[in-house]
Each structure stands twice: as C-alpha cells, then as structure tokens.
Length: 608
Image (cartoon, one colour):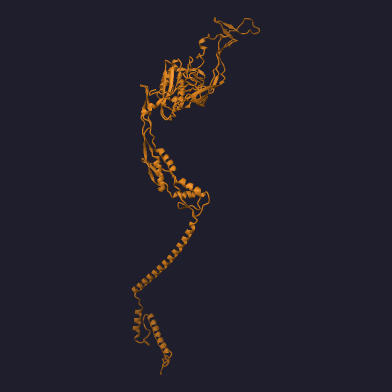
C-alpha cells in the first residue's frame, strides 16, 4: 500500500487500500470541480483566468459538450405536432365516450318522461287538449285543418263554410260535459255530413243560379185589341247534389283546401208562348154605370185609355195615380163637379174615382191583393159603400200587387152609348177551379149629420122655416172577404171598415125683417117704438128676387156625391175633406153589380 495525497489542493487524501468507494468519490469530485471551472470560464466569454492547474485537453471536451446541447428545430416541431395529434385524438376519444354515455342517459330519461306524460294526455285527432279550456281546445284542433275550401264556376269562386267547426264543437261538448279523462284519445267524426254539405251547396247555388224565364204577355196591340206573347228564356242551375257530394268527398280525404268545380245544368222554361196563350183568360171583371155628364164621362174614357193594356209583372205593385198620371186639362181632362173642402167645385178629372173603384172590385175578384185603398168622404152610388176606392193625384191612391206567378194585364173599356164602364184582369188563373172571392159590406151604424145650412129667402114669412133638403146621416160600414166554393160559402173574414160623412139639411128662412110680396112691394114688420105715432115704419133693404133654380140641390136624387178622404186608413172619419176628382152623380146612377155579385171568371181567349 502507498499513501497518495495532495496537500496543496485542500482535498482529502485517500488511502489506496481504502475501499473502492472512496476512490470513486474522489474521482467524481475532481470531475465536478473541472466542470464548475469550465462553466465559470464560459460565463466570462470563454477567457481563462490563468493556465495554471488546467491541462491542454480540456478545451476540446468543452466544445463537444456545446454541440450536443444545440437542438434540431425541425425535429422539435415534428415532435410537438405529433404530441398535439396524440393529445387531440385522445381528447376526442374521451369526449365521444362521454357524449355517448350522456345521450344514453338522456334517452333513458326522456323515454321515462314521455311515458309518464303520455298517460296524462287527452288527444283529439292527435292534439293534446289536457289543461286547455274548451275554446282553446277548439282553436287548437281547427288550426290543424287549415280550411280553405272553395267552389269555382265561370271564373267565379265562392268560399265553402268550414263544415268541420260544427263537428269539432259537437265532440268537444261531449268531452267537456264531464271531467277530462287522461289517457283518452278521440277522433272528429266526419260521417253524416251530407245534410250540411247540401245546405252549403244550396247557399252557393242561390247566388249563381239563373232561373229559366217563362214566356208571358209582352205587350198590347191597340190596332188588333189583342195581347202579344213572347217565348221565355233558358236558365242554368248548379247541380247541388253533385256539389254536396264533392264537398263531402274532399272532407273525408282531408283535402281542406280543395277547389271544387261546380257542375251546371241547363233548364228550359216550363211553358212556351203557345202554352200560355191557352192558359190566359179573364180572371176577374166588374162593370158599373156612369152618369150622363159628358165631361165626367170624358174623364172616365181618358182614364180607361191610360190603363188599357197595362202589364203588371209578378211581384210588381200597381199604382193608379202612377198609371194615369196627373189628371190635367193639358191631357184632355175636363172640369167636372167634385167636392173641395166640403164645397162643390169644378175639378179637372172629376169622375176617375169610378174607374179606380171598378178596378178595385175586379182585382179582388181575381184573387190579387190590394195594398192601398181609401174610402170616399161620402157614400158612393156606383158601388156598394165599403167597396169603393177613392183616388186623388198627389194624395190617396189605389194600389195592388201581382201575387201570381205570371204577368197580368188590365183591360179597361167604356161604352159611351150604354155608359157601361168595365175593368178586367187578364192572366193565368190564381184561384182554384170553382173558387170565387167576393166582398160583402153591411151598414153597422149611423153618424150624426152636420148642422143645418140656412139660406135667406125674403119671400118667406118671418116666423117660418122651410126645409128644402133633408139631412142625410153619415154611416159606418164593415166589409168582409167571402170565399165561395162551387157557389157555397166556405170562408168569411173581416176585410176593412169604412166611414162616410152625413150631409147637412138645407133650410130656408127670412131674418131680414122684410117680406117681399109678389107685386114687388115690401111690407115693413118693424115694431112701433114707444112715443112714436102709429104707422111710422122703417123699411129694410130689399134683397134679390127669389130664383128657384138655385134653391134645389145640384143632385136631384141626393145621392152620388163623393169626395176624397185624407189619410191612409181604410176607415175615413167625418169632418175632414181633401180635393178629389169624383164628380157628383146627376140622375141616380145604377151599379151593375149588387152587394154580393157572383161575377163569373169564365174563359176568355187572347185579346180579351
């Protein structure tokens, strides 16, 4: 063994014989010291403090160590990228596993919740109405149908009403009549919808149908005295049964926005012109007798001329005043005696009330309906009281409506020689065979006449009064509409009431105090005043001589005086008069028909 020590370096000395461990530690210690020195030297820019104690081989080792420490950039990037790819791939795998697990958990939870909710649902055609009011449920159910069904024809369209609404309402009424039952499911029943579809089809067809027009009277030929006829026109109508069937089919196919093409059927008129010529006849007629007053008869003739051949279509209302127009002298009407506010005047058109009253009876007999009629102020003589119809242009009118299915025509004629006035209705029979309608009137009361009218007559003694015209009381009449079947009464109904004013008595008297003798002298009737001599008298003024021609009534018979009554009612009360065009009768005119005339509605060919 030998000792090896370095005293100057301060290091410990090891015995050679010591354990190998110590020796190795000494070697590592020396290497470490060199490394530290190298580091110090590198930190100072690579310059050595001194060359003492350092061998020449150390520098190359230092350079080699520096080369090993410089990394390769490309390799580093590749390594980093590879590492990122690995990390990303791992993250994706981990995330996928987590999502899969979450989805499985969610699916399980939703299936469980759905299973729980389904048990609480109340479904109507797939709509859950649980928790909704009846109206909310209705709106929710109807919203799924999106109803927009239409019907089209000839570039026109019509909306079809939502027929599902009634079915939904019917079902909901049943469901909500009691508490909702969770878990129940219902279906809106679309069976038995034909009736509703037919009603809808009829409504649509009503707007588009063009009804066939029957032929009828087209005019009156004054030269031949005959009516002319025209052929009707074809019509077209919607095939309602086909349309209803198409609507039902669209509903059952759930085609709620279908546009259905309407089918059209052409329809021919029911009657031809030849058919109608055979069907037309006089269905109502009435005749009265006029007076011998020429002006009055001329007025009647002009009114007949205005009415003759006039056509009144079905549903049309006839107006006497409109048909004749104003009865003026410019049209040829003559002044004739009439009443104006209770006074006898000469009025153009006097006498035409006899025409309107005669027409009124013909209209009633034919089965047509009067819509306006007025009684005269005074009882008429040419018709039974209660069966007259007073007119005055601008005032009372006579009107009737054609309530038959065919046009009717008026035939008016006046025979001046016989003074016969006839008004007829020409058309297709309204009443059944063997049926007749007549008016019957009865006097039901009297009305007090007005106060007497006094006339001064100086030829009458002072203490006398002479009644030259007796008073005529007024009257009240009730008129009935009587129906006969084969000349036997089968029905009687109230028609209207009429009132007629009375006429005042005319009384002559002398209140002048002087009596005119036949010799033309006067006799004073003044009393002798007290204190005066007997025989001293005071003569009163002498009036005009008596003229018998002005003391008699203008109507010798006292009948036939008429005046138009104001107002629109059928019962005219006494006390008020309006201008009228009815003349006074002259010589007791006779009526052609009695109170209950049984005028036949016999057949009359074309031209009657």
